[in-house]
Image (cartoon, rainbow, N blue to C red; front, side, top):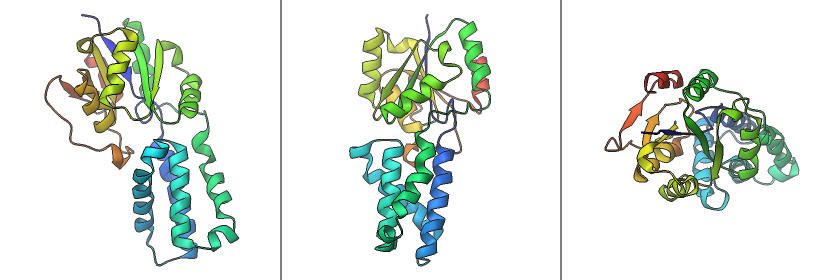
Length: 231
């Protein structure tokens, strides 16, 4: 039976969430210079909650993140947020999140090369701001190993069903590989995909969910390089 492999991009093939956490750290510390009544941990929690609230209008990615940082900063700081032009400070710190520079995670290149040499047809499925994600995929040094890529807003069952339709594939022949229990595993399984879960310590809490261990089967790996043992 043919096998078609679909890979998540952020925190599966490339570093992503770690950059967001770095910016959060800088902005949270800046906020505390103005108002120490809020602890560092509370500020980070507020950032997270605000991103959840902004998910529908902004989706995933740097636009939601940057907007959420500004809203929380203004809520805590008040008038000095505008007087000291802190919106420009946040924009400057967030600029790195819009870049098309990508850093492959350890083992990603050799694993993709191995699967390509084995003859597997591979795709990338990623979510977020279309312009940002498209630039990141196009900048990938391993892009040519993939037949195509697909950018969605949320990674829902319907998105996976649309992917099957777009490429005229059968779900039982497809594997979704990623670090998000929610979007990469459970939603793909609802559409009939086999799934491979590769945990990443930087996975955003919004993506955490108890993995459905029913059929189709889910394999859990410690490292992307272990995928060679499956294929």
